[in-house]
Amino acid sequence: MYAWMFRHLPGPLWLRILLTVLILAALVVVLFGWVFPAIAPYMPFNDGLVGAPQGTTPPLLS
Image (cartoon, rainbow, N blue to C red):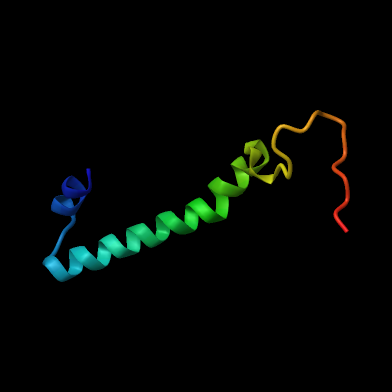
């Protein structure tokens, strides 16, 4: 896929490299700006406990 995209970009090698970097940077901005925040509520990464029963609170560490 990347080779296909690189072959279809216009211009000399230095321009194709620059365009590839710009496309990848735009992709990262879109992912971090809209996609990841949109799916964050559905991901279990913010759960603080692994395997804790529902409705229980963990003991406080002091």
